[in-house]
Length: 325
Image (cartoon, rainbow, N blue to C red; front, side, top):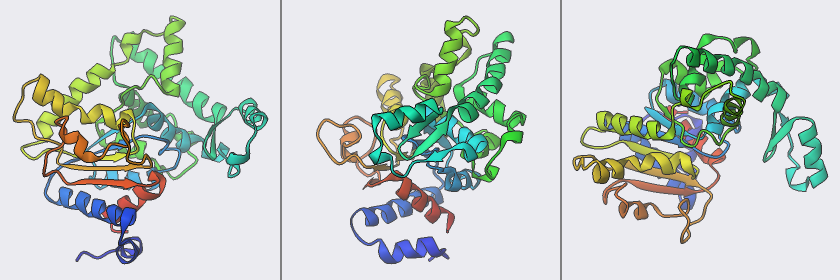
């Protein structure tokens, strides 16, 4: 057996049944998948960046334990917001007791609440806005077009944000990904603060929508990336939460097989979802993995895991296992 750190040792000793056992099984399956030389996609939904997942996920990226990411526009930007405005965040542990008047008071302070954590609008959103607008505008003036994550990479790698860093930059997963130029898929990017800001510039006539590459272009990029990287055994799919971050990329396999008629396309070769959506009828996030077989996404023999728990607790534990912590 490999040498294990204190977290992994604790998991082995105490996580024997139910969701705890599923967590360990999924971690072992992820590890085995990588040991067999196969690649892994990680998808981020929810508010995992605001939950500071970068404290573990950035090292996963640096150690090549993920080869492609799919995330919401919120997760794409909120890791950078935490990087440059961390000291201005306000935690609200009593959020369950807030009245509508309390919530309005937070709005007036420029504090947008995500459960128990308020993101400061001026120090986070607006601080990024002035820098990313320049990058958007420069690209447009040159007749260039990029994906949302590529613009973020340009901003991070330019160094213009370094003076604002308020956390150890090693804990920013976006900075780690930028340094590796890791491919990221960002479906529905328009549903994010930066997406809204970009749209506002288009409405004002200061930018053109065509400067930003679209979701269809993300899908076609992913189709070619999957074809080039899947080999004969497929890519792994590690899904944190539900929603579009997972729904969008998982469809690339049936699209290639059925619509492109590339019948040698392998299924996703590992599947794990961490979700607090309990198994149900009619709910995609609550669907058991076997349902995905009927849609041509997973095979009969694909290792499948579902952990019905809080991803802010579970994901760092699985990453700790993979890192030997």
